[in-house]
Length: 91
Image 1 (cartoon, one colour):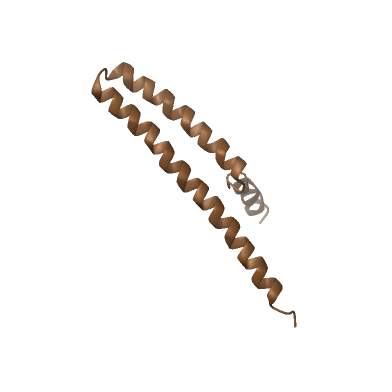
Image 2: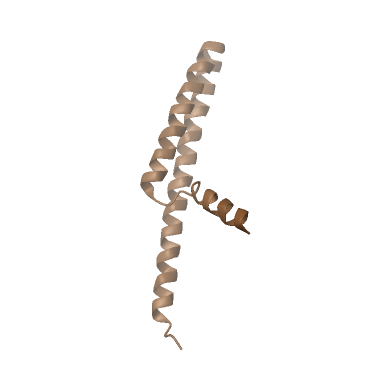
């Protein structure tokens, strides 16, 4: 039981709750993608390297949009639940 509580606490560290946290994660993804892209340019000179670099950076845009959408959706869900709980009278 004690181990399950510790694992739950540890798992909460990896949950993105705010937009600031989301932006930090997206920034880290972008840095990694740029590094990977420059590596691809060294290994695959020419159009192949450029296309692989474009794929790396494009994936960050798609992942970033999904992360921001999920943060917004979770916030709206929490607000809706709070409004519903406030509207229901306690018995």
